[in-house]
Length: 93
Image (cartoon, rainbow, N blue to C red):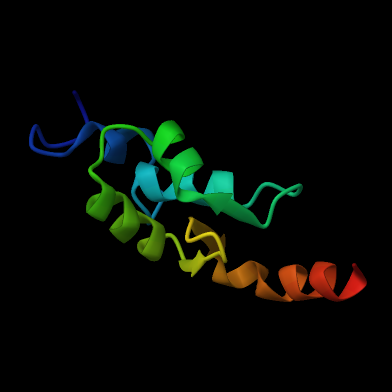
C-alpha cells in the first residue's frame, strides 16, 4: 500500500492513467470487437456481471454506447464511435 493513500480504491492503483472505470473499459472491449458492431443486452449482462440492469445501462452510456431496439423488441447496444462502420456494412449488404 506504499505510495497511495489507504482510501484510494484498488483499481486506481492498477490503472492510474485510465480515466474510465474498469467496468466501462470492459464494456468498450465487448462493443469494440471487430466482428460485431452490435451486442445484445443479454450478452453484455452475461459478461459484465454484478450490476443490476439499470446500472449496466448507465455504464454502457458512460462507455459511449447507444441503445437500439430491434424489430423483435430485443435490446442491443453499439458504440456511437462505430456508427460509420455500421452504416458502411449495412449499405454493402
